[in-house]
Image 1 (cartoon, one colour):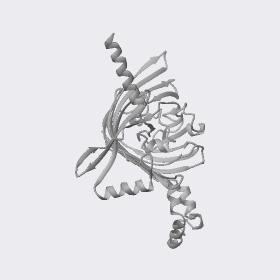
Image 2 (cartoon, rainbow, N blue to C red):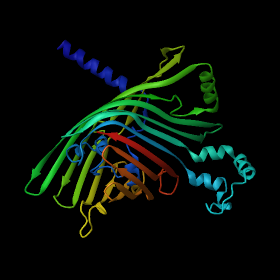
Image 3 (tube, rainbow, N blue to C red):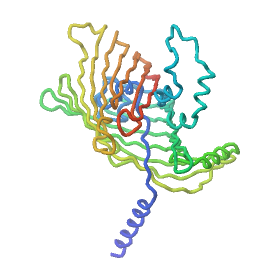
Image 4 (cartoon, rainbow, N blue to C red):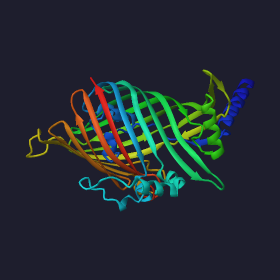
Length: 398
């Protein structure tokens, strides 16, 4: 009896310690490729991107091509270009490529200096890199992937007195294991089921949750003196996915991401003269589970049209993070359309959160190259703070 009481006390102490820590929000890893961005960021049922098992593990028994990956390098950069366009008054210039002879740089500089703080405040630049480390195998219902990704976004906000900077920047290395299988139902229907478990180690900017002007200057001075500070944390999480194939042109999906949540436990580290020192700052950040639905119409061979001209016409609709009621419902809608031309060229388009997306791809035996133009909503309501993104990737596979 005494041992039972002692065990209960220990459990309550551990649980109490965890939940009395400061729990903060965090952002997910960058798994979305330019292929999916141009496809309206619909990523639950696309049959030719095996890395999508990072979002929906049911694709492990569903994708059309099994591959061993040497590397996949995906670059993503963007900002609120519409605001920058208006702030610099670019509408007053003739931007026709046939008649344009250059900007009036003196006028542009004057306009930029009128409100440089406002330009930085509202442009909100960001950059993402997935890879170059991306080694693994996907096929026969199994997925193993070792990856790294980088994310950085600057956001300046006005405080009560002074502005402060949020540098949402992290780098991480992770490994994912997934398993998928399928069951035949009656004569025509197939049910694909998949599960994945992942682990990642992340290094994050100490200004991730904001810093005042004085804190930013102090951080910069430390960098000049060879003193580097960063937060280090790790997490384990899992995803579950289901795909229902009706044996014809339609397929449906249900995905639960982070099904037991995703929790990071953080420590502040100081690096000086090649030595790491623990300086405290224990806190917890959390990413909530999310439930998403998807449906796809897919015709591999278009009637009356030779496949070497047009083939693989598909339309996919996703409703993401259904139970997140803090955002407007239309931000959850993702629609993508793709058509294969001459068997190797991909023409893509879509609608993401109310904004158009489009892109092109080349898919040959050992190399994929993709380019996309993508828009999404940074604000609460559609049209509030649209951000434009250009993304490209190259993938080597065998």
